Figure (tube, rainbow, N blue to C red):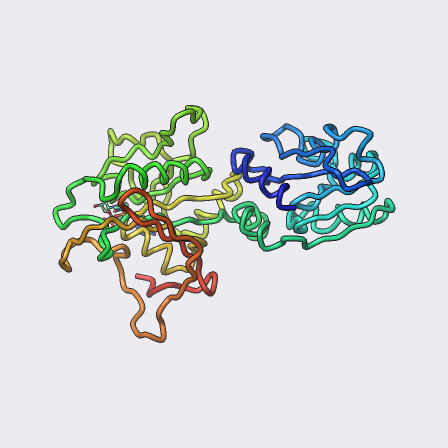
Length: 333
Ligand SMILES: NC(=O)c1ccc[n+]([C@@H]2O[C@H](COP(=O)([O-])OP(=O)(O)OC[C@H]3O[C@@H](n4cnc5c(N)ncnc54)[C@H](OP(=O)(O)O)[C@@H]3O)[C@@H](O)[C@H]2O)c1
C-alpha cells in the first residue's frame, strides 16, 4: 500500500476531477508484477494500468489499490470487470469510494465474483492524500485551502497598502505549487484593487493551458490582470456548491483579510496554509490576517491541529486543520 500511495502521489491532482489513485499487483508468490496510477480524465484507471502491466502474472495474485475499484460505466468500463477478468484472488483496498455511484458496490461485486476482499489498509494516509476528492464526493463542495502570507506578528499588509511581497522566492514558488494542485483560486475584490494579481501558475514546465479557474468575490475593476475571472458574490456556501458542480475538488482562497475572515468565520476552511516571514510590522495599524470580529472569549477560541511545519528559505510554512471541522471560527461580520 505504501508503494500504491507513492504512485498516486507522483501523479497527484493533475488527474482531477478523477481521484489520484495508485495500484500494485502482486503475483501468487507475493512478487510485484505490475503497478500503475490513474491517468488524466478519459484515460485508464490505476487498476487497469497495473493489470495490463502484469498480464497473465496477475492470475491468483493480489491487487492492492488506494481507493475502491469502480463498478460503474463512466468514461471507462468498470475496473471491477477488469479485476475479475484478470483472475486476481485477493483485493486489498485503502478506502471505500464515497462517490454515490460506488459506495461499497465495487467491493460487493468483487466479493460476489469470489474474490477475497479487505478494506481499510492505511486508510488514514489515503484520507490525507485524497482529501480534496473525498470532500468533494461527500459534500458536493470543494476542499477549501486558505493561504496567507504574514509577518511573524500576524499582519498581511502595510497600513499604506503598498504592494510588495512579504515572503521570499521559495515560499512564493510553494504558493504556485498550491495553485497548480487547485482547480480554482479565489481572492476578494479588495486584493484585486490593491495588488492586481494574475493568479496564474508560473512554474517551470507547467503547461500554460492547465491554469486553475480564477474567481473574484466582488466586482473586478476594469483593466485588472485577472480579467476575465469569474465574479461571484452572495452566500459562500452557494458559491462553493456551484464550484463543486463544476468539478472543482480544491479551492485555494488567497485572501485578503475580509475574505479570509468570511470563510473562517463561517467554518468553511478545511486547511490553513500560512507562510510567516521573519519580519514584524510592530503596530496595530497593519492589516491583520482576519478583518472582522473574532473569538470574543477564550472559551470561543478556534483551535486547530498543526499538520505541517517547514522552513522555506528564510520563511516558515505552517499548515493546520480544524480540530473540529465545520465549527465557525469567529463572529460572522
Ligand atoms: N499577505 C497575503 O497573503 C495577502 C493576500 C491577499 C491580500 N493581501 C492584502 O490584503 C489587502 C486586501 O484585503 P481586504 O480585506 O481589503 O480585501 P479582500 O478581502 O481582498 O476583498 C474584500 C472584498 O471582497 C468582496 N466580497 C464579496 N463578498 C464578500 C464576502 N462574503 N466577504 C468578504 N468580502 C466579500 C467585497 O468587494 P466589493 O467591495 O467589491 O463588494 C469586499 O470589499 C490588500 O492590501 C492585499 O495586499 C495580502
